[in-house]
Image (cartoon, rainbow, N blue to C red; front, side):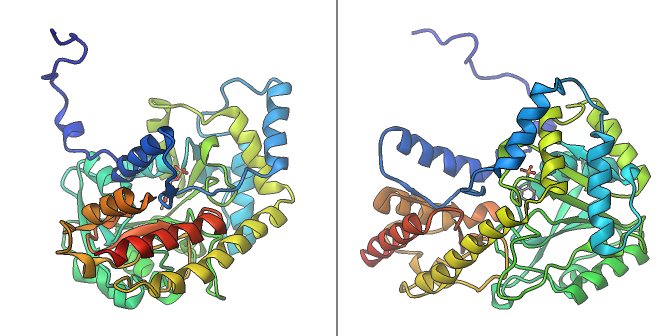
Length: 403
Ligand code: PLP
């Protein structure tokens, strides 16, 4: 049969896009979803999103926005009310003197990261990214014409990045550094002293520091989240903070994130945004305003407590399985166990074939660490119920015992 004109191969695409990888975390989730759609009972430990509903008060604020007709374009960079609320929250927390001019809200933290990277990175600029890394950092840098330079962080140090890791890979082409803490996929939380040294070093070399604190609320065991926002007044030309409503308030589908930076960086990001999406959804902005200014602490604490309990159970349970070895990360809702003891068995030779084996043999979905820069590991999310976690671990243990 003749191929449809619409599926015939050979379309000429831009070099920019052919060099991009499809988000590898999505590829695994898609395979698991296909099986689930066929009725297969898959324990999905892949998702990078909370398994909790968005708090009721936040949903109500979204509904009210619709009822009141707040369904039109807003200011491109987000409503002044929302940006004031975000600036105010940081000012109260960190003693900064941010105004709405230092804030841009967009369609997810991902968009603001992209805007900021596009605004700052020139062709050939090097940007240092600790590895393991969140999947989009290197591709966004590359898309902007820059060169991602990975700073390898050892699992023996619980994957906590240190200043010396960054300094070791710097060159005279280094333009900036991206730090994500708590980290997706490792859960590592950077120590305040190390972060301060990185900020000071960036400032002394006229480099930027993009600090992604998407998981800021999810730290455990008395660990403290150190935010680079603390130094934004001192180093306004250096520090850029990116944050998101997605994880803290279980608002992944609302698509609302923001960046905080020097007015000129915000202005540049705003220009880019004006030619792509324009403002984030007016309804999501109303909901985000309620999330930030309303009394939602109890909801966030409840989610935190559930993650803390699961983590407490999960880490020893994974470590008790022969061949699996897992650091004890302080934050986020992921663990990143090493799986290389299984390489060489039944065709398993990397994180992808390990994840494929678990999906085929145990009907458990995990994300291969290769997606995050480490092929010796897989990412397991505990943003799923205790019951499913127990079932998942039981199945993993049984499948690995056959190897
Ligand atoms: N940064 C990190 C480290 C993430 O894990 C994610 C989402 O998974 C984001 C940013 C982007 O989140 P969103 O675009 O949903 O705000």
